[in-house]
Length: 343
Image 1: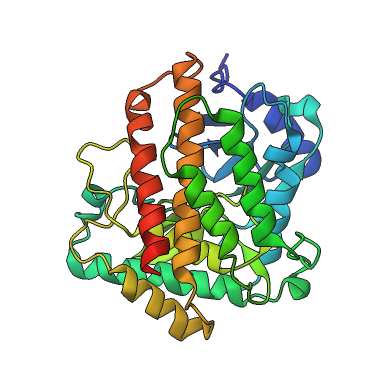
Image 2: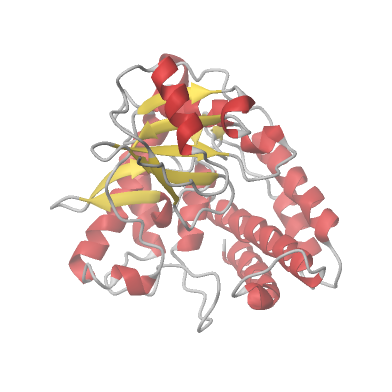
């Protein structure tokens, strides 16, 4: 008598199969096996197969308490809206809001083959010419996302774009206050300067919120962007926040062995000026305030890293690299300040 292997924490293959058989009869043709896809920072992602077909399941982290921070319906809604457009996203399969099935809401989407390039070392396998082209395709795909009419794809009420930048700045200021347990020279100066120089936002678009190379899958003979992933921070807002984050991740940190890395040092990687020029030419948007958006990205990441460092000092975080997160925060603060001054 054959038995189904137990699933990874957070996903019971037997219960999932029973649910799929009820909701989508015939979708799965055999017992399901699942594995946790490593590398996720928040929501849990699983590779699920019945031996002939593969899917991806997304659910909140184990023991989560803030449903609004891990809204599966919201993620499912945005990929459902974008799937018919030119933005490459996995095909949505189904959403389950019944917490009795897996212990939390979850959704199923198609499995897309491809590689998320997280470091300059990983990009070295492509070589300079392919690396250059791949990063520029990343910019082109961002332009496609920001060209989508939210109302036309059922996302017209997906966020509150009015006052978006001011709200973002206040939100991350509160996050900083919540994790502040040491002196951080320059962080208040950066936060205040960003508030004083708040730019006027262009027309709102769907914003990814965490757009970078390791949140897309690259594959095929032409290294195309096969899927944009991790939509948990998506909303309606200022599209240039996505561009600022992309520019930030295209800047070399210059810290050997850093637990947080960018891909900027890869041979052939476009310069930040190339990235901004490519976006401006293809989108037609005014990018003259890109320095503000990039400085805001440095501030936001500094706050996130300080939160991780704070949890580490309290013994609430374990794993490799967390002991060095704290030393990165001043580097991000200084990058933010110098970016604003140059601008």
